Amino acid sequence: AQSVTQLGSHVSVSEGALVLLRCNYSSSVPPYLFWYVQYPNQGLQLLLKYTSAATLVKGINGFEAEFKKSETSFHLTKPSAHMSDAAEYFCAVSDQRGFKTIFGAGTRLFVKA
Amino acid sequence: EPEVTQTPSHQVTQMGQEVILRCVPISNHLYFYWYRQILGQKVEFLVSFYNNEISEKSEIFDDQFSVERPDGSNFTLKIRSTKLEDSAMYFCASKLQGDQPQHFGDGTRLSIL
Image 1 (tube, each protein chain N blue to C red):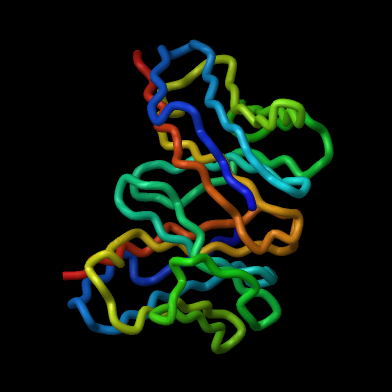
Image 2: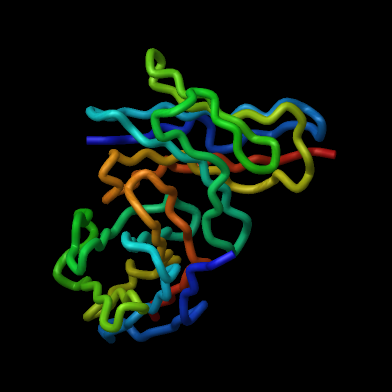
């Protein structure tokens, strides 16, 4: 069975500050891991994915995430927050068959001017 | 860039009525999914479809739910007898192959009265 835990339902940062959104996963098989962003009244947009290649994954909009197997973590970071980053962020895990993807509860990011 | 399209964007239905939500996945994709998101809650997996059959389904996907790919382009979700608790945003997604990320539509907001 697979599961995802996102620590912090809300994160608030100042514009220009570091963004860190935490994600821990549980998987009995090698996982694929994803971060998605959701803007109000829209679907989910892929930020980045880990599929067993490089452990440091770079995505769109300056985001990156590091897969740490020993910590079962896949935290999302961005060095400098922008107002347009304010959204809901979802971490997700699937097995390598890809038939089922489990999403975390989401973290809403607020960016203060 | 190709998109997953969902229609309608908003569906209002009386409790007990049947509803069909429609999706047009990206044309060369092979895996298809339905998710739901109750207002303010996490994205929940409903069902995946591959090679013309259900590949996996969640406990939410009971006998009231069914999926079809009737004509090689559309992918539908049917709820036979809707309940108030079916009110949610329903997202369709598709992907090309196992290690690729899913592409999401913008969702259909289903309101059961």
